[in-house]
Image 1 (cartoon, rainbow, N blue to C red):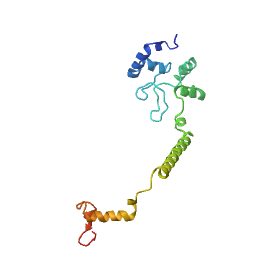
Image 2 (image 1 turned 90 degrees about the vertical axis):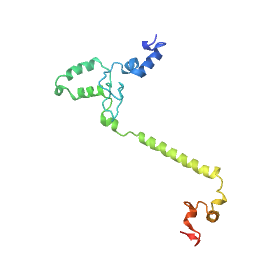
Image 3 (image 1 turned 90 degrees about the horizontal axis):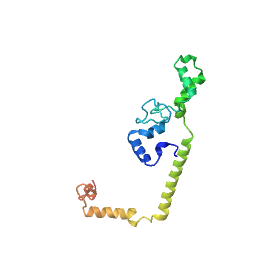
Image 4 (image 1 turned 30 degrees about the vertical axis):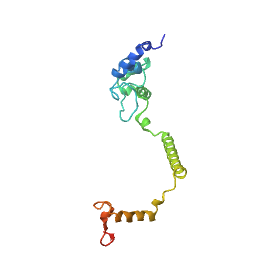
Length: 176
């Protein structure tokens, strides 16, 4: 016998198909005994601490008898509640305070370290490719061959309207 009765056999496929399309039983399984208190992100009843959507759709903890007694006391004057009871009510609804989930964690050091290792690896690969894989540049890349090629382009009057030859004065044999 399965612990969750709706997850037997064929019902699993039907439940997931229905669960993703319209909510259905899968959403009820995710929520369990927690209260749905709002719309949440994209209308899904999930708990998520986010500065963009600071009020989650469901409470963080499930309802228990101790909390029910505290809720009854909450309906009365709040000045009668102790600081611990107020904190307990808050922790029932939220996992962390706004300041806690906004606080920097040391994860940025790991991210920066990994990024620098990736950059160093990329530089190492490019240097090794340049020294080991690529051949020496052809002779046509040195200044003598390039100037000879430029003279040849000007002599043949290649692209005389908008190209390099248009900037050469053929009467005076110098650049315009």
